[in-house]
Length: 94
Image 1: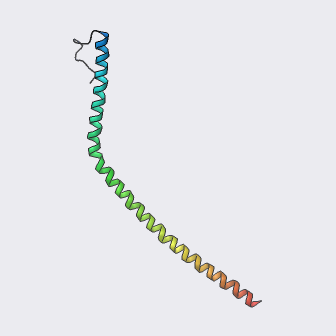
Image 2 (image 1 turned 90 degrees about the horizontal axis):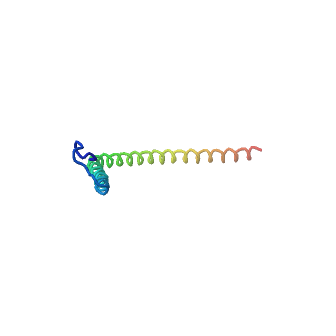
Image 3 (image 1 turned 30 degrees about the horizontal axis):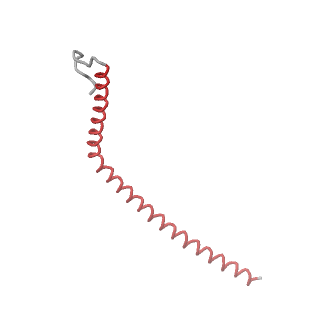
């Protein structure tokens, strides 16, 4: 992109050299944009699939955590009930 051949033809004036530098930089930018756009076409599907997999995994983890939380709440309610009945039985025993 930045070569001008074998060196036998090149800009001679300062303005010609400046123009050559600008053309080279713009050319590098254009080629970079083309490469990026081409790579995106290949990668976009993989990224979408990976995103779907992550969402499914998060939903699975969320369901598991919700189920475990319900179990903990049930066990806590049972312990509270036992504690209440135990302190009530102690009061009657005195």
